[in-house]
Length: 143
Image 1 (cartoon, rainbow, N blue to C red):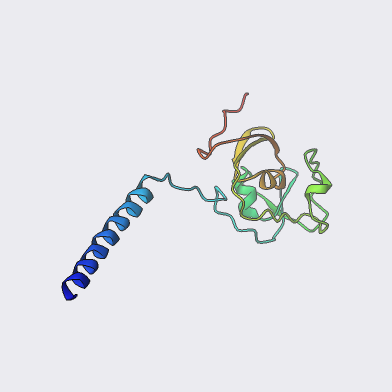
Image 2: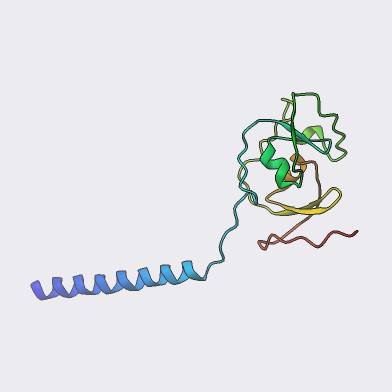
């Protein structure tokens, strides 16, 4: 009986090792996931204006290519955003809460840019042009 218990314990140890090796191999073979926000910006609400577009904070503005974003109050950006659809925005002015959903898209304004999801693209004042794969690449902008 003791030999049978030792044999079962040895077999379980071998199976455990094989299972661990398979998990490690599978993890190594998986492509690295990209961050849901390509710039690593938080959704902290400190609104700024960049190029006439409202952004939730300066990090999001800089991520969209605006280096000198100005702090703003709720209604003084003078933004004209033709892609803004009131159904896509919450009732409180200028707040975008897009969540952490990773469904990458390409979006354009004067140039094409990658966003983690369509909500973040619209929040940054871009018009969504197409969904992209996990590569996170968009076709080059046309001059």
